[in-house]
Structure formats: structure tokens, C-alpha cells
Amino acid sequence: MSIWAFILDALSRIFPDKISIFENLQSLISVKNTTINLTINNSGSGPISFDDSKKTLEIVPDKCSLKQQEELKKLLPSIVDKDGALIESASQKTIEGIKKEETTDETEKILSFLKDKVTISDLYIWRAALYLRSIFRAHGNVSELKKEIIEKYGERGRNITNLCSAKYIEEFFIPYYENLKGDDKNDVFKSTYEDVVKNQPFTIFVDIQRKKDDIIKEINAKKSYGMKEINIHGIGSSNIKVVKEVEKYFEEIRDKMPNRIEKKIGNRQYIYKDHISQQRDCVSIFK
Amino acid sequence: MKDIITFSKDTKDFILSAFGKTTDGEGYVVEANNIKQRVTTSRGEVVRVDELAAIKKGSLIFVKSDLPSLIELTDDLK
Image (cartoon, rainbow over all chains, first blue to last red; front, side):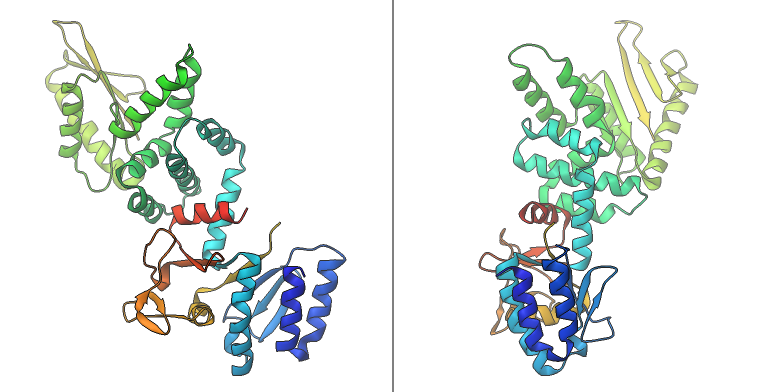
């Protein structure tokens, strides 16, 4: 017996006066092969109704008699056992959003690239980060989603989310891999990937918990470890505010030492010049 | 396409009751016949009623509504 045959059979016994609804549904399912949604909520008007336009059967427990409620409670575990899951409506919307995002050309291409190059755990983080990025691009609030990723995956979750938001997958990891040559290219990639994800050697992501001085301290620490190029990213209005403060700091130094620091490329790069060794360090700011 | 069976936030008590669960004074999902026993996810995390996303089969698995859990659930529903 199919899940819907089972559900309709049970519901027709709980709601014998609504038999026309079930006959209509039976015809839709068996003849027209239509997918029907079953939703349980307390905001509807009747104990049970069918919305033909949404192809949704709605049950309203608050409008059911006590006997009907008890019968429904007995039925639900059997439905889960047969169908697999009972999902809260808002979570169902998120699931639909994840599915939609993962079938876009852009995300499909990224996930296909990552699939055999990162661990299963990292792949889950990238999937979460890509979904978060899609919400951010649609001007949704992502702070709670980011918090959930960090709670589950810790610092690695934070780093991958930041790298994903700043398009490091498209603009660094994929081109880097494509330019690698030799039999050991996968090993070389994995080593670099691990270093970038774990240590973020050439990136600083401004977040709401860090002030201008924290960022400058981190820039100096990375420079002292020999990093020649450092990218500073700030996404979101509060983070951009901090990035602007950092930029102001560079402007002030440049005013004092014009020969030591120059500004380049769309005003977003500050190049440190070392006149003795001719070395050039670069700090790029992305807002 | 797979059948979709959903419940709204305002029916959570009803849904939990159908599975022999309820909530304790702190809002955690617990066994109705032993409210000291909190229900856990497959990862062993306790579940607050406001973060309950799904109940799925497999000796009754409770799923939280955080994004990583929902991505795992997306795979389970394929």
C-alpha cells in the first residue's frame, strides 16, 4: 500500500463526513499522479480541508474533536515510519532553498569541484557556506546561519564561511588547482587548501567582534611571518565600517610616509616599499 | 518528487504528544513518561522544542533546525 493510500484510508475513518475530499485526492494521486503535500497546522479554519491550488491537504488539530485528535496521534508515528520524516514548515522552506541553491549552475560547479578534493565534513561546511552566501546575496539576514555553522564546525566553519563569502573558491582555489601540473597536483592542492582554510595566511576577515586595532595587529603579525600579500575583507555594513577605519589608518601612515606606502589599483591596495631590500608587501582592502 | 509532510510551529506540542514526548520546564524535548530523560539527535545533542526541525524514521530520530543539520536532512530525504 502506498503512503497516500495508507493516509487516505486512515483519514477517511477519522473524518468519515469528509469522504468527498479523500475521493478527490484518491483520483488526483492514482489517475493524475499528482504530488500532494500534507500539512498540520493550527491556523486553518476546518478540521480538515484540501487546497486544490496548492495541492495541500491541511489538518487543523485545534479544530478536531478530542477523539479525532487521539486518532491522529496514533496515525502520525505510522506515517513517519512509512514516509521517512515529518518536517517543521519553516525548516521545509530552508530545505527547499538548499535544494534550489545546489541545483544552480554556479553552486553545482563548485560542489562538483570540491567533491573529490575535500573531506566529507568540509564538503558539508562548504554546502552550508554556499547556501548562506545565496541568502546574503538575496539581502537576507545571515548572522544566525553563520552562528549555527560556527557552533557545529568551530573555527574551521568560520574560516570556510568567510572564504566562501569572499569568493575564494572561484577566485583562488579553482584557478589555483587548474594551474597545477604534475602527478602530485591533488596532493599539492590538498596541502595548500588545508593551509589556507586552517591558517588563512593571506586573508583577514573583519567580523563584528574585532576592532580596528585587532585587525592592524593581525596585519603586522602576518607581515612579520613573511606574508607578502594580505587581503582584508569586510562583508556587511558593520564590518565595512571597521574596514574603513583600517583604511583610514593606512591613509594616515601614507600621509606621514609617502615614500614608504603607495596606493594602487582602484585605491584598494596599499603597497609597503622597503627601499633597502627592494621588497614590496601588499595589503589589499575589499569592501 | 517525494511527498512532503509538514507541521507548523503551533502544532509542536500536538506532534510531540503523538510520539510520546513533551517538553520540560526549560523547553527541552523529553520523554512524556519520564520528563528527566531528554531526547537527543543522532549526534547526541539535546533538542529544544523551538529548534525542532523534523522527526524521521530510524528508531525515531529528532533533527534540529540549524543549517548543518538541515543539509544532512536534505540528503536523507533524497
